[in-house]
Length: 132
Image 1 (cartoon, rainbow, N blue to C red):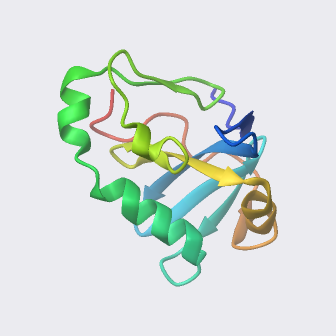
Image 2: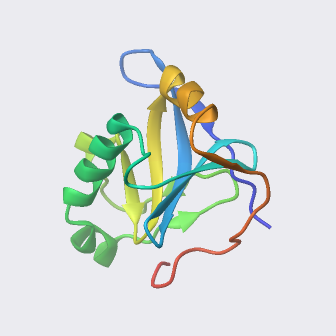
């Protein structure tokens, strides 16, 4: 079973940010805010900053990158790329199909912990269809 936990690291400016797992299913955004604790949002309830990040991530042509790079989702929510990664998105996030890694500031992650619908148990233990 996977364990989904936000991972803290410092960005290029030395600020603490978190990489966390999100997946989209049937118009719902499932974002992990703590170890195995997720919040579920709809288009109407998803915070604006997350909508912008998802829009930017979705605008990138991932098909070209995924043709040449193999992505792995590890239990600690780190995706590894064998080839080039678009540096423009390092502080925003990336995706493979409906699986996303969001890069969030501490205050964004804290806000997510108190909004949306809380779900404690895993509903999904594998990657989305069509992913590596």
